[in-house]
Length: 572
Ligand SMILES: [Zn+2]
Image 1: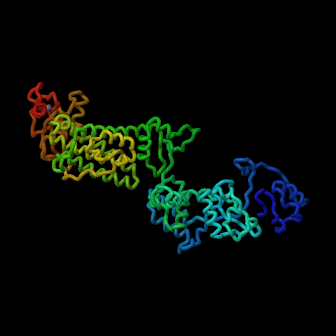
Image 2 (image 1 turned 90 degrees about the horizontal axis):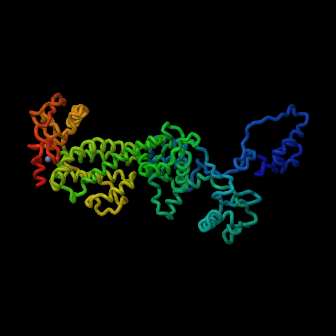
């Protein structure tokens, strides 16, 4: 490689014996050597022509480039670092075995890259960067690996930063009384590959003790899937080389953000969704919820339509909390575990199971799965059933009625537990909820950062809901027609007749609440308006026989203008 860093032939052309007059070429720029070489060929040149072809150019100066084979610095992958019985490759491969990968398949990307990678070329030729701070003896080009010299330079870097290499003279960079003559030395001007810089952040951020940034190894590294080749790998290699361990216990890789058709975002296509614009339009809660609701293991789709759906889901969660909080506002103490009614024990047991499942999904970084389970529970059991069937007791029973207090307690436990689950994603909402939460809910929490996830308390198991859920759907289908035909506004206008023994709820008021009807009886005198079937048993739906109570709207009064027995007592 007889070309120097200026693009000129160096002394070594003399020794190559390719030219009859090598002296004329030493110092000549290679692009200026074309003509003299053609001349040298003389009659041996058969044909000469010019043609246009593509050629690498410097992006900055736009000047043509050439490739040169030059000396570089490498970290050897198959040598054993001092004090280690394994090669760096072996250490890194061993370290990988202790890492939890999300997704699991990500291990199969990183591992073969380590297995198959060549030595790591860590030197670059740039005019700025972290210097590879070694001296070389000018005359022999021998590099000085002298611990005294290196430690002196390291100490100078600690005080003055790495720029000391450029701003200080050779003499200043040598320790006092050094055996080297500064004039005999030259600084190596190469800098470190930036992957070396970023790959050593575990050392500067975690190990150095200079920052309150957690422990080494880090609990988690997270980046895009392109970093298997970059940061994940350079960090692993440097940590394995120095300490024979991975710098991260867990590795999460995510995809890239694309539009709703899965296409890359580009200004020219006009499909760019900018985070700051989303925050302005929807707020940061929606943006974070969108991340949580996206399958980050592949590319993440975003568009206005998707964000609108996310906003819908957000509203569902928010409204659920609002309803629960509004209804527990006057609760001063939780009831005892044995004071819960059947419906409360049913929802508490459900919530306990569902939240445990959501928590374990979140613990495994499966936010999509966790939120899907949570949203399903909110939509169906919690808001779809429980919040609906408990309205009568919440709004119409006496303020201190035991049934009402039990339901309020169940709601308070559920909302507190659920708040701990969603707070890491819906942080502002959680903070706002805490502001409005009753004192018993808050305890000595000052703000959202004091919030920890607590499980819903365990209560005695309630009824098996299989048949009841089926019956609720069948009943609702049966009366939907009546509602559509405007023959009925509220299910409180009807009563259900049939064999109630197949249902697992023993309390008759609870059973009426479950269907939100005014009565459940063996038979009814009222006009039959619909039927439905469960487990081969027929149930008939009748117009309620009693009068509508003006207070609770249940058809349980003796006369239209007269409160029902329950309401009469409460009002009295
Ligand atoms: Zn009433």
